[in-house]
Length: 227
Image (cartoon, rainbow, N blue to C red; front, side, top):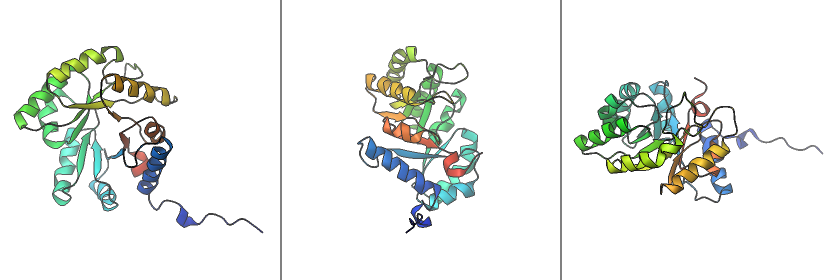
């Protein structure tokens, strides 16, 4: 007697379904509440049609890394889909603070005092409080943005004094190394700071991130295909 091969129907119907299943399994392994991880679909460089395909599958949270590109795509999408949520995940220039506060529902890349001040002023002007993550240069890499680990306590004091609504920490670990130690370090830094949200994990390491406490994972190529 031969073993039956798995039914094709056992495979996820879409990349989105597969990623959601993997997140759910990782939450279960970590004994975290089901649904405690927000999946952010990183739609930078992707056309509106590709975004609409994911919306049709029930994905409503998206991330962009450039203000100008997001302005070109999302206002019209929001008119058609009022439940959309948009996150700023890339480096943000201080002179774009007003536009970012008007457009985004969350900002993941607060990493220096000048940007924190610009965002606080923009929020005061707009009468809108946008949740923010402080980006930490967790691998101490010269080419990456983010607050230095040693400077984090002092920087958090500054942004809290400005009234900026900081909800957690964000980081991108060094490429081509085991990410778990970096995720664990960021989780400890967040706990020490009294912050309970972590924006960590991308297409190649999101399951590890969820197991180590990610509340937000930022996934692009695994959803949309390689850029």
